[in-house]
Image 1 (cartoon, helix red, strand yellow):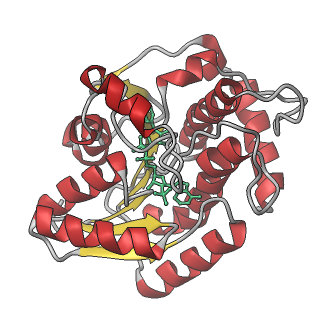
Image 2 (spheres, rainbow, N blue to C red; image 1 turned 60 degrees about the vertical axis):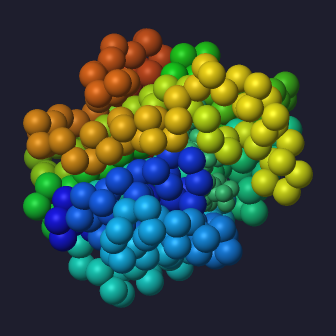
Amino acid sequence: MQDKIVMVTGANSGMGLATTMELARRGAYVIMVCRSAERGEIARAAAIIESGSQNIELMIADLGDLDSIRRFVIEYKSRYQVLDVLINNAGVVSLKRQLTSNGFEMNIGINHLGHFLLTNLLLDRLMVADQGRIVNVSSGAYKVGKIHVEDPSLKKGYNVAKGYAQSKLANILFTKQLAVRLKGTRVTVNCLHPGAVLTNLGVDRKTGFGKRVYMLLRPFFLSAEQGSQSAIYLATAPEISGVSGEYFYRQQIQKLSPRATNMIDAQWLWQWSEEQVGL
Ligand SMILES: NC(=O)c1ccc[n+]([C@@H]2O[C@H](COP(=O)([O-])OP(=O)(O)OC[C@H]3O[C@@H](n4cnc5c(N)ncnc54)[C@H](OP(=O)(O)O)[C@@H]3O)[C@@H](O)[C@H]2O)c1
């Protein structure tokens, strides 16, 4: 990964931080994309110590805020001509129905729409890399998900499983449709399920609510380092340089359930997402 520029969203916590540390250790220049400068700086300092690399930079973007994403991309492009790897890792699990600053239901707004805009705006920089890679961190939770074409913002009958699973299914359909659009280029896009991993996902950042449940279940979870292996593999492995549009678990391509291979839904989602983010 020497001299490669890698961008990791949600890099201050959990698997994003573990991915940052390992890729920096392997020689990459890592851009940590975080929404909080304070949490980002603390994590960056830890990543520098842990990896032994100074090539770790913090940049600020809130994936729940389209203006923030656009500002971030303008800044990135003013300084860097190329992007080798984009790891769309940031994610939330929203227990109640909440809205982003642009009025999107929070799971789909951050987990899918924020990354949809970010990725599309960065495609030109990925295209000029030797072999650009996009890695979307999805989840096995997609299996209980559905794209609610009539009500994607889940105004009716919201529950956390419905919201999170829809957003993680959207990560996969986005991967599928983007792979079609990237055919004939050197850029690949793949997605993954990391396993059940002990992180801060679903833990309230202010109150810490949810942390105790994790601690009780600790023996059943992978560590963040273990959970980050799939993203690191998809970002680095030479043998998959020509593989695109696939869903991985434990470094193996997995068969997807029919809803995640429905290209009519994938096309609908693409068009809807373009309209929502104003592309
Ligand atoms: N943990 C699991 O068992 C599991 C299983 C399957 C899939 N996943 C997926 O793995 C990915 C990483 O999650 P994790 O488990 O490592 O959780 P985590 O420790 O909670 O990390 C999530 C990261 O996303 C960031 N983030 C959240 N909202 C953001 C926003 N609006 N803008 C920018 N960054 C934002 C968080 O920043 P703050 O610290 O500022 O909130 C944090 O850095 C997620 O996509 C998740 O869906 C996790």
